[in-house]
Image (cartoon, rainbow, N blue to C red):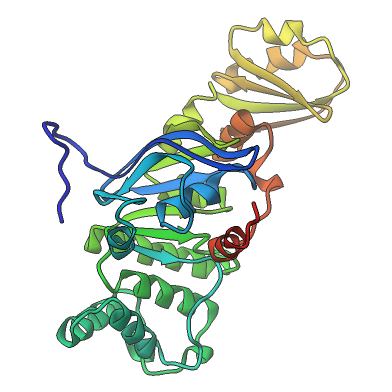
Length: 334
């Protein structure tokens, strides 16, 4: 089904939330979230552990009910039409869910039967997807003989069997070696192009989000605190980043420099955003006494994450996957 906004042209939002909220007693996990994800984009949802990221996605995939507000996926209301939402999405969980005693082809066949696909359509889709993820030659091998990268690619293919409008990827390359991670992203990009699928992903590899996502939303304390293209988010920091190791606490001279757009202090380090740092570094060093060491780098999404959440992204470790979180929620946990 092709979605169109009434009376509006331009990109179409395949996912829309309005004032979406989730409460666990006195704890508010998601605060009135308004979000629109466009058809055909790769959207990264990033945030510290416990920030509301997993809760948001679990509501979108109908694993949790919202306390208030609304959400629509592929035009269907997640509360009133959950079965239609589920038919519109594919999910690749962080935790492996393949049957390792079945072959790759049998795993795809089982998934297709669960979605009621006809035999002819099943065979066509299996052939297309096995080719898409380069598993045609290994399709009849049992999955327990697959490498980690092959299993991840098969899970992506399985998530696409029923042609979902949206594919949710939970840490799609977690635990894979760099070469396999790069190949996995190659398959995902090919899938977006050939299948015209919208992708919503979480990742703890910030460089992946920077390179692969069309837009990134950073969520903290249940609210979206930053949302834009990765390049725009990096540019919002106001220049290159200079970090100074110093015991100096009087930074008035540094803050007064016209080229300095931001100054923050953390754990004995002074971090300044500086325009045209190659021209202004001598003035910066002269403005701060007792400098022990200096680091200069172009802004990254990790710097953006630090600015908006108060902590570095790499301070966060990958948490539990959606499946474990859903089970915990069903048992009354938070």
